[in-house]
Length: 237
Image (cartoon, rainbow, N blue to C red):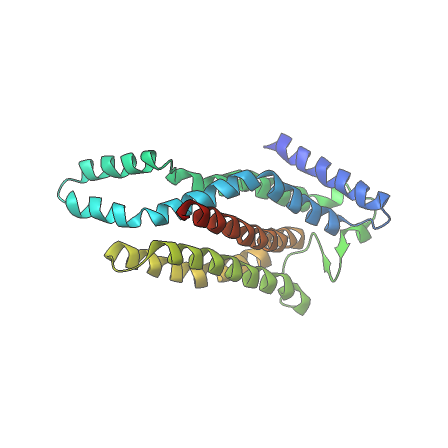
């Protein structure tokens, strides 16, 4: 993990030198560029995740039939569900891949920002817009609540888009579907508060990463949804 932190630090330094080269030296912009690079690299996984979620939602009626038919035989029911997934090229675990990949990135960036003072030559380099990239939220500084609020708002919008997409594809009328809808509705309101709190407790540079990550994710989700809808319309035609 230390090697990964060193790589992250070196990448941040390189991106900072890039911003310096174009005349706007800023570690804040370097973090924004880093976020866009990360989201671009994992875009194929994001596409696969959303396509898999869409297919899973489309398969809900067939899954419900299997659950009703084999409700007294859980082992056969699970085997039939997995067979259905295989026939339709759906991998339930694919939805976790983008998150799993981002966890070590999150930790490396957190560690790098925590030791930010060790590799900057001037404390002013830690400043971006109104905040210090190394500082956490403080009750004595009202401006430190801006990033947490932006993080919560962008998380809400991203979750809202994901929930709306799932609801539009899954349909209603089944207990499992109703339970899923209830869970999604809870997450719609819980996740923004959770992410806002996390953003408040970590260095502001990481909060900036969260906000930009959410904004880029929203645009990617809208684009992928449009592409998947277009493909579905072509297949239906």
